[in-house]
Length: 491
Image 1 (cartoon, rainbow, N blue to C red):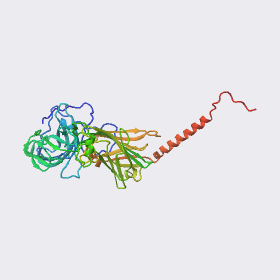
Image 2: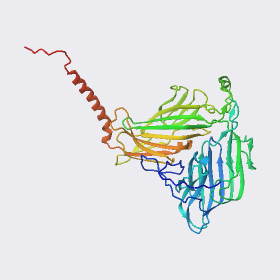
Image 3: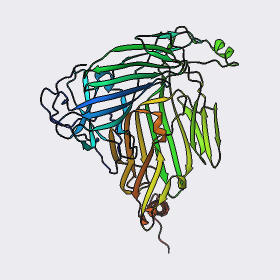
Image 4: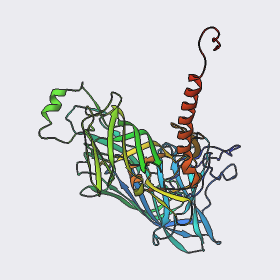
C-alpha cells in the first residue's frame, strides 16, 4: 500500500460517509461540514505510534462484510500524541460505513472523533484521522476497538447459476490489516456462515467455519498480502439502493404515521436460464435453501395498526400482519421470487399511537420524539442500504427543532411540508445517511421541538375560517342579482 499526495480543498465539499459515533443535538439546513485540515503537499502519517499487537476479525456471515480490529498502540515518540491514522484503499472507501473507534478497556467512554483526509482522485489510499480522548504519553499504551462495515464487496462466483443451485461468494482481502504504522504482531480471523469453503489462498489455520491467517511478526506500515476465499452463501444478497422513510406526527389525531419506500435488489448470482415457475412450484413443498428473496419480515412496535404493502402494480395481498399490545410483525411476500439481479420497488406503511413515541416535558411546551432511525426488514442474511433519507414531519407551528442520533449523517435539512388546510406548512426535518446496514434498526432517533399551546389551534381556526369563507361566499353569490333587465318598481 502506497501513500499519496493530499489535495487541498478550496471550497467546502460534501462529507464522506463517516461511521464515527455522532451525537448531534443541533439543527441545520446545510450539508454537515467536516474540518479539512491543510497539510503539506506530500503527506505520510508521522511514525509516532507502533502497533504492538493487532487482531482483526472479519465476519462474512451476512451479505456484507463486518470488520472489527482490536489493536494495542504504543507511543514511540518523545512527546504525547493524540492523532492516530487509519488507511483505506480507494476501492473500499466509497462503500465504507459505520466506522467507529473506542477505548477497548472502557466501553463507557464516548467514541473517538473521526475526520476524513481528502486525497487526489488517482490516490490509492484514503486516511481517516482519529483523535484520542486524551494524548498518549511517551511509551504508554492504549487498546483501540475499531469497527466498520463494507458494502458491495462480495461477488458471486460463478456469476450465473441454475435456479436450484447453491450460491458461492468470492471475497478478496489482505491478510495484513491495513495500517499506517509498523505492527509487531498481528493475525486475521475470518468467520464464514458454513463450512462449505471450496477454495482459498494462503495457509490459514482452519477450525470449522473460522479461518485464521497468521500470526505475522514485524509487518511494516502499508504492507499488503492479498488473499481470496470462496464460500457457500445460498441466501439472497439483499440491498436497497435507496430507502425513503417518513414519520408524520399529529397532535390532534394522536397518531404517528410511518411509511417506508424501498428500491430493493438482489445482488446475488443471476440465473443462467429463464425462470421456471414449474420448477419453483416443485420446490415449494420441501423449501430448500435459495438465493432468491421469497419474503421479508419487519418487526414493529406493539400496538401498530393499519399496515399496508404496495408495489408498482398496486396493493399486495400476500402479506401477514400480526399485532398486539406488546409486539407487531409485518410479514411481506412479493408477488414473485426475487433472484439475483432482479429489482423490487415497493412501499409499506402503518400507524401507531403517538403516546408510544412522544412525551411532553413538565412545565414547558417542549416535546421529545423517540423513534427508530429505520424500521426495515430483519433477516438472518442481513440487509444493506446504499442511501437512506428520513423525513420527520412535525405539526404545523413546531419550532426550535433539534435532533440526536448515533447514525452517521451526510446531510441535514429543515424545511416546510404543506398538506391539506395548512397555512405556513408543517416543519420537516430531513436526515440523509449512506452505506447503512440493518443494525440501524436498533439506533434511536430523538427529535425535540417546541410546540406552543396556541399553535395547536392553528388547524381548527384555519378550518373554521375556511368553512366560514365558503358560507360567506355562497351567501354573497346568492344575493347577487343575475336577472336580465331592470327590476320593476313597486307601485
